[in-house]
Length: 474
View 1: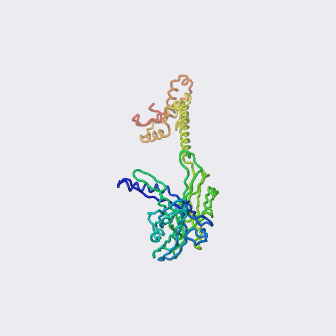
View 2 (view 1 turned 120 degrees about the vertical axis):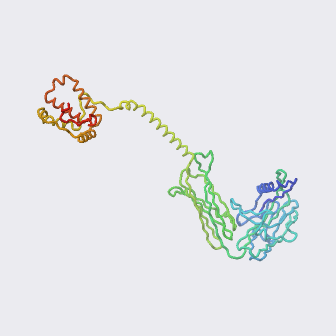
View 3 (view 1 turned 90 degrees about the vertical axis):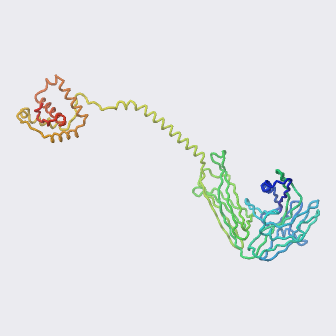
């Protein structure tokens, strides 16, 4: 297990800027962290944790294969103390000086890799409980030699049961690089360590939680019309007190249950998630659909402490190339508006003459007379009675009320246009001398009957006298 550590050396005192620059450069120094010789789980055969210049391993008796003890696997109850020995070997051609200390382990957030805290970081587990033998926290190791360093882990009485993971580290005092930033210089140093898996006796409660499943599709100008590249992210949290090694399965289905993607984790490369740690796993998807209804489901299975744990989480989304559809909708709307304008322009130009011709009522022909309500009735009665009957018939006076009622009735039944046409026909008949000469007595009676009808249609109020149906006033 290798890592780098940093030392800060001030060249000028600037109190107001030191804190901010120190934090910024501490983050920058973390970028130069080097991790080597760390696999995410026990392997059948491997070399000691080494960076080529020195190594850190658990102590094994002479003649014993080091691969039989790659890491420290320790167990004790709360309140007890565990002792063991670590061996630091200098494989370089120069003398090296090391700072030996304990550190807490954690999972890197992105892929769940094993990592440890640096010297000076806050510790709360193995890094806090581990104590190196008196005077041996700093050791000098000659080239090609090994030094055995005893240590002990004092477990507090209130320690929680379950797994506690950490490491014992050997930090080389040599500077492997420097980074200058303003008035602050950062020295980079490398550390190598051996893992420690400590189990505190007590109830074991394995638990995990799969959540935060999400799909991130490629965006940008290049993907304006949609992209088939996507990334599926999800997190697994260890909510128990023991290490879990989950096996994951990712299933993606489209509309009507079509299988779009299936991905299972590699059984030979399981990740270890420590108690209380959360890991984000990422799956690249290079052929994601551009237009579909997509369901994504992630399930995880693990068997820890003779218990089988399962959990799953899912999400759904609709794959739609929205920018392309928006442009298409705008084009359709613009085309529809243009077509409607052209249609209105054509229809308006073709109907302008027809509208002018249709204005005003159509005049009747000269030989036709509009029918009047009651006209035929009056003519018929005149024919039946004859001219002699009309002369011998005494004058009758019609009450004003009856005339008014009659007038109102005629007004309701005869339109104004019809009356105008009828009057015009009568005047034309009077002015025609040939028609008057050829008209027989019977025709004269009919004409008189028509005159009587026109007089009846006039309102009583116009003459100020009652209507004269017998034609006396004529």
